[in-house]
Image 1: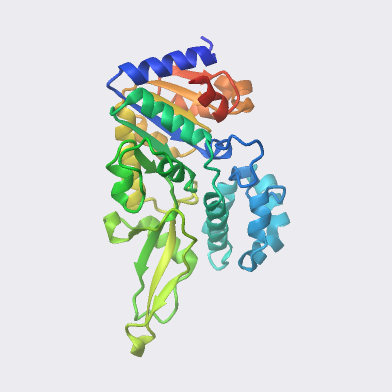
Image 2 (image 1 turned 180 degrees about the vertical axis):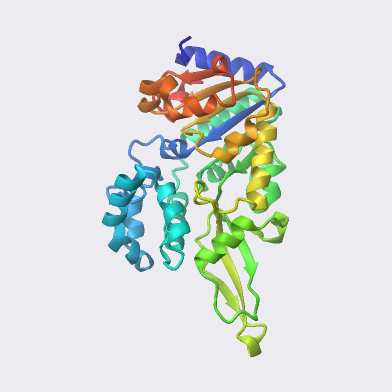
Length: 369
């Protein structure tokens, strides 16, 4: 059976379910959604997808590499691109995994984290909020659903979704994202699955330590921390810049005490680094709950590349759930041979998986009108 559905059929399925079903709707956003969120073609501050993160044809990459803090990455960029392409088949996360596991003495892995932070902060702080596709989709679902519950799972590090939500007056009270509860306890629930530039991992380093911890060590500690998220999680304003490491002296006789303000971002996901971090574990559990309660799931620009996420869903009975995949021309060309479709079939029955028959996020949103 052909999984591709037309714009008209997509609107029929979505509108009927949103208006008439008490079951939840769950929207999953991947990098393709952020890339296509602006209604302005070739918007200058559009976040790059993974394969573009070192591509100097991208404006955000060029601007970020101008910063003195990233000169090491700029100097190694050509070699890094060749290694990513030739050794890791274009998979940046696999390359970062290799750096993390095998080059612990070098600072390139935490340098890449800082580089990614800067790119996605720059994209967020220059978000196009003038009638973008995020706002259109959010408004449409709100109009169709009314007070009925729904949720958004985002795998993106930027805060463009949050800014779009906060800019919409139709949500009462107006959405803010200053606390963890602002994501979890309001409709729609928003789950940042891999963290983001506005989520910080705060640690108070032992003042007895004679050597300052490295970025590599900070990341390792973060990924293995199974304490309650409130013991380390801090949210900064979605409009603020990246904070610098904060230090202050409380024990001057032993060299002072340092507070480390580290990005709560799950990079990479392919390595053998422990994934016991309680925040990411909680997000996966909450996402599983949302999907289990959703009769309609729409995945926009997402390849289902997080193996931990897929594994967590495998014991769900989703025979009564429809999944609509929204992607690029590549998805339409490959259909059942695409990565997104193959990974989705590990969770959803094949007959329940539909592929939107047009190219991109914008076409999907416009089809709903």
